[in-house]
Image (tube, rainbow, N blue to C red; front, side, top):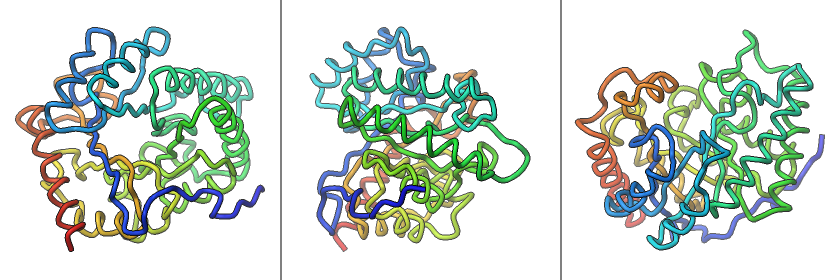
Length: 305
């Protein structure tokens, strides 16, 4: 196993943190995918008060990367990209052909991220989304994951400044990386400085013992945040301990993007993938605008303390 000093992964930013924090929104709250006809959504998100938009390029071959890049630049929006790796591209599969396909597809996704000028590519991008074996991860799976992702991260490092975000997810979606500690261990084993921790409060409330401790475990490796309520409703309407969470972000000096990730049950394909069976707000617009207003208020409260 490659051992890397923590200092390899330090990120610019003051110890107080927060000087460059952006607030983002996930495009899947409004659209099933993102094609050329969806470009006006970027202007809509900007008008709702967001600094960034996260997009999943489901249709990789026809994703309008150049047009998204130009529209975002004209609006002053940051684009982040995400993905949930399909099972046929699972780099911890016992099938060598599937692992190879996962490496090839990951390089293709990184190329698209570079074309759109994305700052970060995060999510469940390190193994198959929904891949469960009925037992805990094995040493062989760990080795396949580390070796494969080292190759992916080095490819990204050679092509751009793109940051890769390893998102711990809950036990119902994966057995491989469930906690911040898992992600940190994985990142140090991979040993490439463009790989960071991507924390998501929806998953954290199911798997972590303590929100601040999880953030502190990620520490300077924290590269991206999904700010989601425990039921994926409007932030502030559920069980997530937002003030302690934001205090911990400030403590570790996090100055990246904080993105609301939720989904509309009226978009049936997305609702099925993400198990959204009931209305979480009167409209996607209400969830977005009230959610970002709440998150900004907590952020300002913590910064002023």
